[in-house]
Length: 567
Image (cartoon, rainbow, N blue to C red; front, side):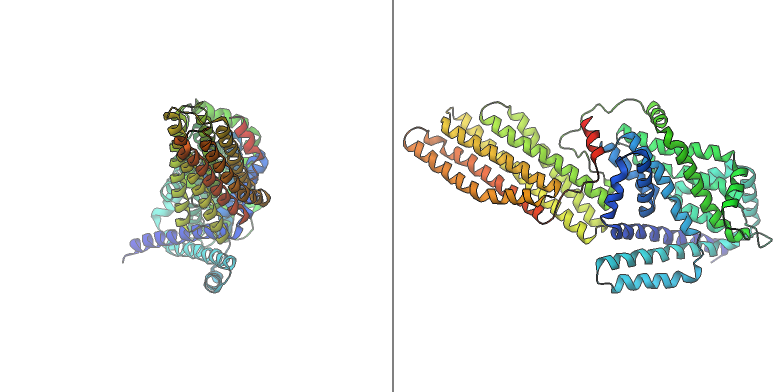
């Protein structure tokens, strides 16, 4: 195998190991963080400063600003975040992603294999899931650095190549070439962290004097700026087919990085001196990886500090570019919150599932109201049928989404239990919709018979409708809030209501005997009562999940409720 092929395979093999280690470490970190991530995500919608902080922290865990940006775009598209809130999180995400470069700058060559071995032992021998997850994080951390070492070793011959030294000289003299090179690399790899790691490794190769970097900090900074521009493409791609505000969020990410890169491109000499001043001292080849990391961090912090007070201006700018509003209403049967791009992030995905189930439950509750109104002839059949198809369509989509989430293998044991409980809740909501369909069928048969129920019979059915509606609302409230007292109330009331059903059935038969009710209506009257009683069974099923500590995943969303109140 000739030298060129060896270098190419070494680079792509090391890069593959780096990306695998980074993604695996991200999954492990999310599992280790568990519900602590919920507290961090709760800051997303509070104010710009806290939004930026949350964006930085979430990105530090996810090890990817692109992953954070995709998550935020999903929230914005679903109407769970305002545009200014989303933009502040994006600014923070750009800061958080620099933590990866800071990690890469550490020289731990002699400790890589012990780190990998320790991670393997914890994962292989650990009995508790938390220990196994921690082992995954440590093992992946070691793999990540092993990938870097492989890339560094195969890049050594490049440092002495006249072609590359001439190319790096041109990049240093013409910053635009470096920016284009960095953007192109990131477009291909789809990870600015990976391309910056490659840059750090290449810059750490010694030049002819053995002390200076083959590229130097002044030559590395333009490539670094290009990396920051290239990473915005992922967000732009994620916004395709999303709402206008989602497109504006992705565009804000691009404007943030592009505007900063243009300004810093004119300040490279001053910026270089500043980075050298704040970085460790020593031979350039020894400290340039840290200098690049510091340049990356400084660039994003300065840009965030400049843009945070100017968020209203950024909102106006992206609104001017992406004009208009989303006027077409969302079809009831189409998911409003579920976003497949968020499936790799457990808590945000569970949050979106919770919101969609809540929406589906509202439709089922409306179905129950429609069935009651149809009993008195107040609603057209099409209104009920539209809601019925909406619930059935949403239930199918939610179940598929939950299945995909489980298939990703990113859920902790506790999250798996919660998500399985949510699956049980949506299935009970779906059954309530079926019961409503059966009840409505009985009601329509009563009307088609051309005969009316007695006033007593109508009053009894209306009373049972009221009870059923109240029980369903209470059961869903127990799931929304995780309130076991409300759940216990539903379970205790069900036993008493079963006796009420029997009493109403006997009362009807007594009226039939006395010729006060038509015997031909008995089957449909009993069918309505039976359907409502089965709905109560489903309410108990939902309440029992709340008793088992199953609840909707709710971020600190007071601001979210404010957003929705204004929609």
